[in-house]
Image 1 (cartoon, one colour):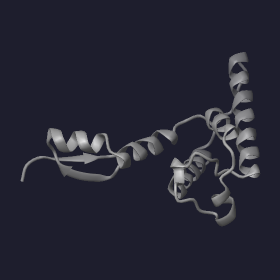
Image 2 (cartoon, rainbow, N blue to C red):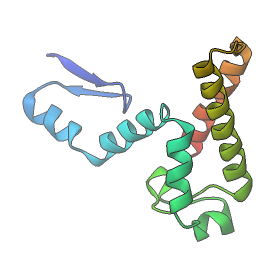
Image 3 (tube, helix red, strand yellow):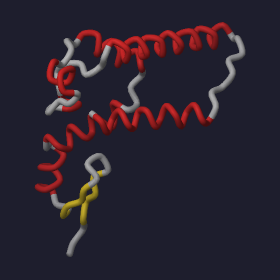
Image 4 (cartoon, rainbow, N blue to C red):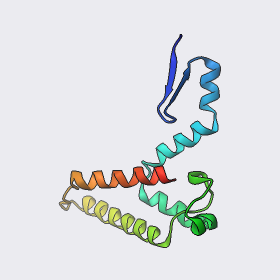
Length: 127
């Protein structure tokens, strides 16, 4: 049958040859999936800055859904989401400053990490 290539970003496989792999790697679906994957690891400050420059998506505000999803050029965050994100950025900045000063910062618990991870994954799936 030949070798098969499995793309972790898109969660699909296909026959591995130069033409198929090049076509897939330059395809819109792959580029979107790759962007979503790397967006999971962006810091909160970068996300906040990007979301504040965007205008709100009218379709998302009216219906709660947007056909463009994560590729929409408008923001899908509500004012409450932006406030929470801003508070998270400020908390991260404070803890970073404390670490630079040499103060003891209690490490986060595993439960905190799992909760944040679950939120990121659910946000990525909803977008």
